[in-house]
Image 1: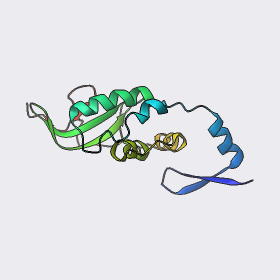
Image 2: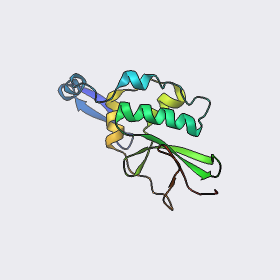
Image 3: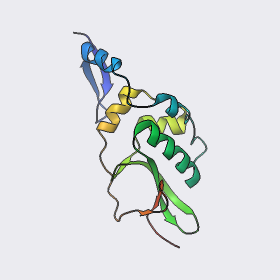
Image 4: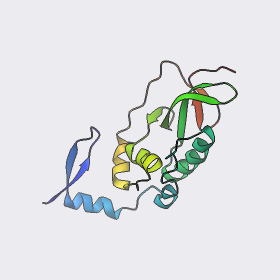
Length: 143
């Protein structure tokens, strides 16, 4: 049986039998790839809390989980260092496929994204982030 290689949860290449890989390709993707493609390069020049809201809403519709940002602080606006996550009761690091789409404009491979989402491990913060709005959180409240 011939093999097809996909990256596994540890970033290592793993082999899938051609029959299984072919079956996976015949199952319609649960992701809305047309909707995701609208975000190609959306964060090439960085992002703001407003851009996070816009992209977060689209990713929630396309993937089923919202994209959120956790900022260093909030005062009259969000600021400081920030990172993007998927949110599902816990914060999960942004899968490489979505990061490449948003920051580099690379198309999403639905099979790889499926694996990346299945392999997500929640991120632990020293303290719970403070919700600023639906898509933005902060580690420190300076208001």
